[in-house]
Image (cartoon, rainbow over all chains, first blue to last red; front, top):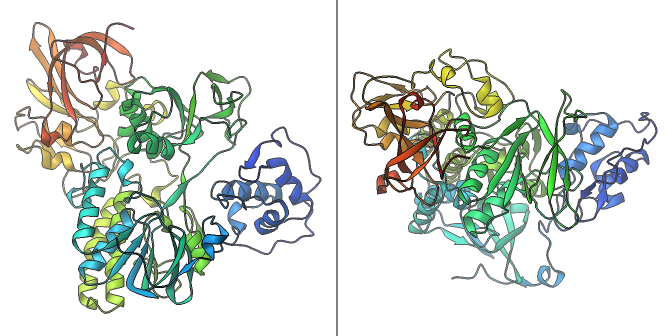
Length: 112
Length: 526
């Protein structure tokens, strides 16, 4: 997995496609065309695309679009999707309000 | 900080099974689930499960869930709902959101049993309201009693797509079509057959081109695909629907494993942590079970949970190594019997041409969802004899055998191999009790009397639709493709606690229709 990808590899020019306006990341409203263009602009990993476009950084944290983004990038780079490592996972695992995240409780879980 | 012997993340089939196994060995166990109801996907599963007795075969999924919950509470497992695990850190420290607070707990062992999420497929219009996952449709119907739509198109013919399609029909929705880009039905043939005989057309090698509508879905266009799954121009078909259901696979919800630092791998069953056969990941004391470790189904998830529970108990000194090995041996045997046959994990993506018995697999079944009468004749469950007898339309090697135990007279044989095709012993006489019909999770067994006199035959079929037909009522008999073939009269409708909500509907049809009439439709000619 995750073989080193040569950034010097020529992937050709960005060629517009009829479905470029298809929304892929619903939370952040990122289109297929934006993701494809980002690859041609030099983003060659899922993490780079995520940081560049915020695809997969919304409410669902890439639960829905993660695989789709992986597929689009890999097709653009002409490689197997499995060769692209999925984006890192970090705590908090679910969207959470800052005031809750900061509200640490002493002791254990409440008894019912 | 509160400490538990075992902290389980996810109260689904595998998480609860592991918790029960561990608690019975004396461990203190807490289970967190982010949902307001426990049971994971089990409580949406209103159909009867496959397998053998030890796998809870012929019991409906939600009942299995109820039994697991009862067992968990009886052995002292603490199940905490609306509790979202937001992190797993060094030395097995877990942070959980409960209400508006963050609670820290520590586990001597952790079991991650977070299950899976549904895959999506993008097409123009896929973000319109009305495009939903098949799991979402199931949640709406079976948990909240809301019809997802009036007229629905289902994409995906795996078991999820087929089972949910049937449940949509049961809920009173119309199904416009079942569509799959693959050239063959992916799920069990028996699941496909019960949808097909309700007049639902199958479109294999087809995909969705676009959803139509401005504010919400008003229609959908599908087209045939070529070998590289590209739509072929000129093959478009249009359907007026208000809902499009997507059943295009599941992905492990393995983010918590990855966050914690488990070594991950990209397997054919999804991006999942590397683990040994007990579910132990690369992090000592952190285990996985169920779909998060690779997509399978609930029956194997429950056994994986038992295995992980026993392994954890041994690791923490609650169970001797010999006793653990004894249990693992038993559970692994149960697991491997489920993982046999043509739908076994190792056969994923393969297309067997013949059954284990050497019989040809019906291409009609794989392409249209139903078999021709003539094709069925080759199978051991398809018999003709005077008087009442069972007809078993089970033509694929799937791990299931409740029919064998159901017959009090021993008419039905499968043998020790769970995936063997059932055969009918013609030397035994059928009492007509109908237990086999009700016990078949695939609804593939019928009782037929080819000659009841005056040129008529009687066919008894499993019937799980409301309202229930009344004796004397007249309607249409449908064949396996759902095409009306003749008017018929309802002779009887039998319901019994032992049938567990599968009603036995007997219809009288002209004798020549004995081999064709397989479904009943209320009302007259169409």
